[in-house]
Image 1 (tube, helix red, strand yellow):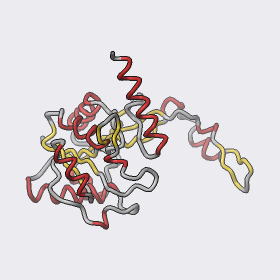
Image 2 (tube, rainbow, N blue to C red):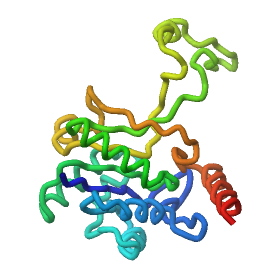
Image 3 (cartoon, one colour):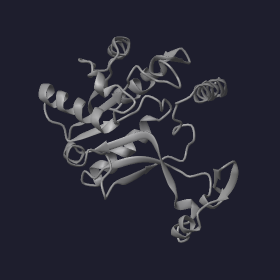
Image 4 (cartoon, rainbow, N blue to C red):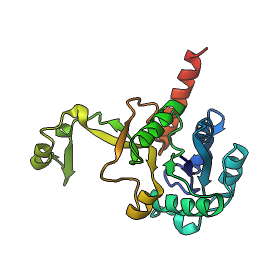
Length: 233
C-alpha cells in the first residue's frame, strides 16, 4: 500500500511570521517534520506544498519532494487544509501515480516521533483504510469552563454539560493537528480527513502534541529541546 506524506507550509503567518522556516535549535522548523517523515520506509514520498520559493528550496535541500508551488488562492487564511491536500494529491498522482493514503503532517508539530507516526499508519492499515486522526486528552473539564458576556462571567450552558454527563473526563479528546491520514477517495468525496468511522491516534505526550502557532509556543519548544538535550548529556 502506497502512503504519501504531505507537509503543508505556506509563507504567510500573521501571529508568527515565517514560522515554517524559523530556526528551532538551529534547524528550520519544517525540516524537523521532513526528517521524521523521511525516516519512515513505508512512506512512498514526502511531499511539501508551499507557495514560497524559500520554503521550497529548504525542503528540497532536506530531501523532500517539492516540485511545484501552490497557487496563491490556496495560500490564504481562508484556504483549508483539505483543499490544499486535494490540490497536492491531484498533482502528485498525475505525475507520479496513484496512492492509497494521504498522510498530512503539519510542520508545526516538530516533536512528533517516528514511533507515533508508524502507529498511526498501522491503525490505518489494520482498520481497512478508515481515516486516522491524531488526538490528545482534554486537560480541562467542561464543567470548569465559563463564558464572558458584557464583562461578566456566565456559567457553562447546563445543556452542554448534560450532553457530556455520561462521558468521563478521561474520554474527552481534542484534535492536536499532528496526524491526519485518509484514503484519497475519502478526501475527494467528503473534502475532509474526517469520516463517520475515523479512528483516533491518541497522543498523551504534551511534547509530541505541541502545535506551534505563537511566539510563546516557539519559545516553549526551544525550552523543551534545550532541556531534552541537557538531560541526554
